[in-house]
Length: 379
Ligand code: GDP
Ligand code: MN
Image (tube, rainbow, N blue to C red):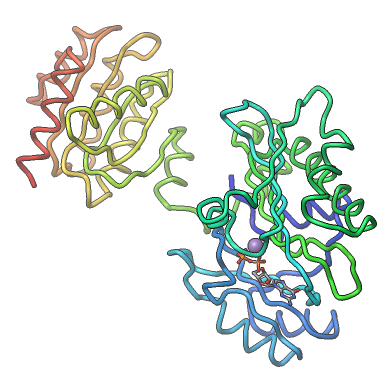
């Protein structure tokens, strides 16, 4: 789950990371009032789940409250990477003399949390990684011991010469690591970690992604979800208890189990097709989930055919078949369905499907080849 900058800031501020406090506004008048209360010049920042807001015109300096209102009225409603800005953050402006990058990620290769820093801050870290990979420094952290002082100092010396600044940045890294671990984050990033005119180290931006698996035990974090900032299909899928990720292909996929869903997508690719989504209806079998799945997938105009791949264990294949029948009664499905199902109650499932004029395949390879052929014909 992505957090907005203002939400990530609240977490990092509470963790003790040096940062200036501000407030969010959803109208220019509110932005003006916050700017007046803060006094002096402020920065107006678009709150959307996207990086590169600065480049897109979503971060503006304002010298007066009136100017804050002007910028807010231009930024509110603006689209950044397809996302509409509904709120702006108003914070006191800092004077910047240098910008560094400091981030915590979960690294698949080392299978550890990794602290990553770069003196080339203020720009997308992906750009730095592509153009000047030598400017990125990393340390993998053993969670049994946490970030050790010599590791933090070692990285900090890659960013600063001044000893006081090195110590201050190492402290930021330690606090960032603690906040990352304490909140079940998969990413926590400060970019830029700025040096101000008087030599103070200050975090000017905050980005955090919380692992969805953390939300069950942390209702305080779950409450931070902003559904208005998420893809509507993903919101609907989550409400229906489905694990769904939209992709760019044209073969809709409905599968039970994440592993089988991955294998199905691989096989679609192998036979020359392109999946339109990842969708796991889960281990249990509830016909309503199948109805929701079909509703969400058929709404995607790219989808030219839908593949069901159901391996019935705990999942009852007749429940899935009943879900398909019920969906076809409730709304129009204009694209062909290719159904592969095998396992628990498959005789009953086949009867249900035959009654509505559909047939089921039992072989996964055959089903995938067929759906790819159907999509080719449609193209
Ligand atoms: P992002 O582009 O989405 O990562 O948004 P940031 O919060 O990182 O802002 C983009 C850029 O705006 C930063 O890299 C800074 O150069 C600049 N910026 C942000 N806050 C301030 C500030 O308080 N003072 C000054 N002078 N520049 C700022
Ligand atoms: Mn940034």
